[in-house]
Image 1 (cartoon, one colour):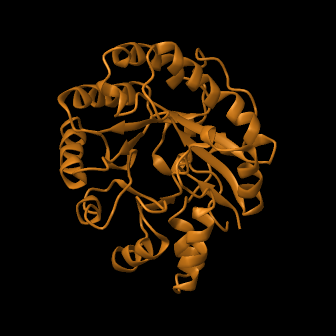
Image 2 (cartoon, one colour):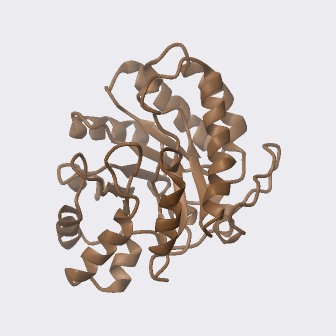
Length: 291
């Protein structure tokens, strides 16, 4: 079985985790840019982090035959920080043109402030300009309120539904998202997000069309093997292999078929892969689970 892990913060994990993921059948990983655990105080720290995602993390993954791609953005939490927010927006364009960047994200809301909305809108504009899809973070507090504002903004800015993945969904948000045509992400994360059992119940009710599961593994108590564990759980519940495969990534992009660990092309390149140009969320996925 070949699995695509669509949301894992591997910079916060040890190298042994790459080996464990490879042994479990994970052949590709998407690593979204995110908060590092404490506020960053200058734009240079973001530049160093983005370079890490595009360089050393790709190399670490390639040692175990895993293809590594990433999403780049000013995350919602640090969008509130006037020391860095505008400066990060100014450096983003050069990264959004790099090979290996498959979407703009994570973007969206954290505390749901006016400043967060301002920078969310700016990054939606950047995504459109660079022909990339959006990876949207739903807030951990007042999740339904954050979802409603997110959907209103995306609709107002006329983003095609198939170019938006809304992540960190729960039972309370799914009914609204399934009606939109957006992709629907579930983080199978101990204690604070979803469990295999809960997501299985959601799939039984709503089906698996446009549903995407991930581990969101990071420096917290989390498990980089949650995607293969969830696939096993879904099979035990009687989901046919065809259906559970669709929920963890469907098609392969040309970018994902290239040799893992190859160095990114320069930001001036205009002949990037279909995945990096974001021709819909599914084109950013690597081999489908069990393909």
